[in-house]
Image (cartoon, rainbow, N blue to C red; front, side, top):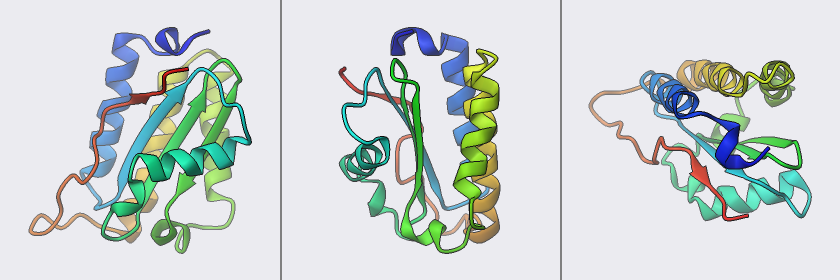
Length: 147
């Protein structure tokens, strides 16, 4: 499977809608980035992308990146230092497991949306939305690598 085929147009919209909904209740930011291949350790590459996508520039350091290497069947979820300080131990593994359970049934958009909702619940619990000061600091669109 290729990144072009991983999500249908409706699936992409479902993921973007899940991001928008999750971010509606928090100052946190969630991004999804997909590539075909990851040619290094998946967590190292996700950390590189976290920086490249400027996710560390959120005011409260509460960005979350979901990275998928489609052809290599790799997934990484990274939270910035602000959110990592407050989520329960093993939380990102739980989010990953939620996504993977859907992926195993070829329900990729559902898996991403379910994981995004879970991440959004923790973000809103610890970083609630403040209509006076909050702004959408990062794009809600799915980003795609070149490979």
